[in-house]
Length: 305
Ligand code: CP
Image (cartoon, protein in one colour):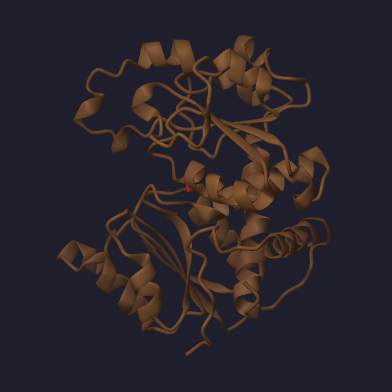
């Protein structure tokens, strides 16, 4: 079996120096093609919920360093179809001795308890609404790259989250990392999508929020997570009051950044025209996802995570 590797389940336990180290590695990987050979080692990619960006960027990053990915994708043709539980599936793949497991799953799965039962680390690749740490890391890496500063120096940067904050694991991870990086966060959303926390700055009016922000992160309306209380939700009203269009984006300063973790509901939370706004970083985020995730995989192989 591989030696035990650390888990990355949330961002609360990642220090500023660890974040700096990961970003420094990701930058070298991106700009200098830093060589690495993990031949003979295996990573399990277990995706119990849909994914394109996270799964394929972990897969790409694995291939880039010779780490062999084994894939359980959405349960198709797996023993989940025969009634095996997600937990048993994870324990059984872990028993095959991979170096680490990259897991996307729902809130009902207790990754924390599982991480104590299995001999390898778990990298959270999107866990219900609890968190999506690698997405928040690649977002901050993209901000830092574009704003031209070191991670410590994005202190004070004003980040506005627009939209379905209540169901967003991406926002949850950003709220964690913002405490370490000392960035300022604020939210703008209709009441159905708002958090109950009174600790987070809130904007009622999107135009005011846009004038305040250095970075906006537009969130996907997660229709698949909405319960009966959303029956009265009007997509048309949402688009009108919270959708980001080119005319709305005029409120943003010229050096502001527009981000979205994807996938995008075109014409709902964001108009397609925003993708050609020079401030928009959506595909840069995706590109950086490969390098940041490669840096995370290398750190787990080296035992430095
Ligand atoms: N941002 C993100 O997690 O995208 P996927 O669901 O496609 O992985």
